[in-house]
Image: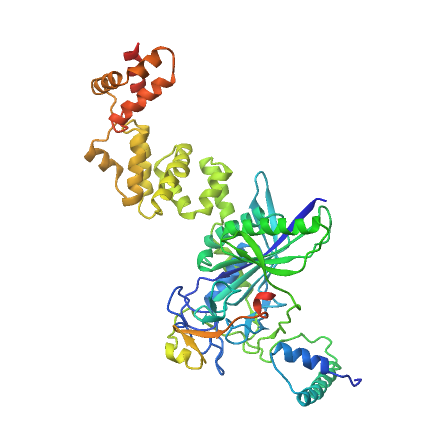
Length: 103
Length: 477
């Protein structure tokens, strides 16, 4: 594969993941991303004619459970990791631009 | 230029299961915040999802009822985005291999019917609920999160851009609501959020084959607000286009108080959800025998029920629609019809006085027994009680479930039709209203109705109208 500069892709993915990266980190990530994609390209060279695409390594029927209730966690366990709480809710910063609702 | 409105809907409904899609937490509505949560629905590391059999059954049932083609192989994907209502920072959803493809639903327009096509139906998990501290979503300075709702099985139904007015969108939703209630897959309470609807809406020059730029409208919390919001948004777009402007692809919120749509935020970039197959779940493979079995178990659906109502009781389409939209009312009518065969009179009472009394009293149909309702009508038909008395009894039946026969007997409410009983009242009314008597004798017909009303008032509405009219005319000669 041609050597490609992946800095733009790193910036894009970092923004989606809400990550702030130092220039040195970006440099390292761009190199790693290039390696990963090269490996993927090698896999794509395999001849897969006649092979059914799969999305999971296991060829098993999916496990199902009956619709019965089981105990939930106690409230203090649920809120244990919440940095801020209010009236048994988890308190989070004001919602800004991005997210589900702008699709 | 004349524009055509094009609308597509995206409907979400919570399926009627006891437990969540991937864990045993309760799906009950209205409990204390964060009390129905466990490591699975909170997305804690190391937890693994296990499918709820019932959720799949309800999803397949809904798809079959909507004539959507259930896929034997479907797959679940992670939809990645950051929002505080999403504990895992991804939603388990379906992307390119949904549970069902296509489908349609017929709506009854004024004088015709139209098939509205569906694109797809898929299963996903519900997000948590955000409570905004502050006036509205715009003014909030922080939010509170309740994860009780997170992980409830959610069905997404996407229509084709196949609806051409806010009114049609409303009719579609109402019909969809009926179908989903008939097959008991969801309680479909828009006010509790178990049925929600978002819309894409655009305008194009009438006759044009290509779609215009669309906007998305959210926060429509009732059938009425869906219609109003989309009519509003269509007008807003039309005025921009007419003035030579262009539509910006944005998301709008419907403001129920102010009756307008306002932009939530403009779209800076198209979202990238980075879907990928959910590694914690195996692909969902359904046996075709399982799908067939569910298809056989499908109950009667509203359209079929309407045909039965039209045929069996000679109702009008509008009446049949009323009885299928309001299932309790339909059951009430049909139970009453077992012992009362003047269906025309029955439906007139049901859609007239009965609905009026229910509205007035704020009651539902729980108290009143349809068989006693039929008895009430029979008493009117047999001349045992007058219509005004029947109406008063009905008001009481709706509130207390009382037996009309007993009330008539205990309170001596029977029709007064004997000459001996009516004449003294008639004479008293004639003496007390000399002006009306003069007017009548001078040929004013209306004066008779006035006098009849007076006698009715004195007798508490119990006078036999035919007999009263006859005797009154005789006395006034």
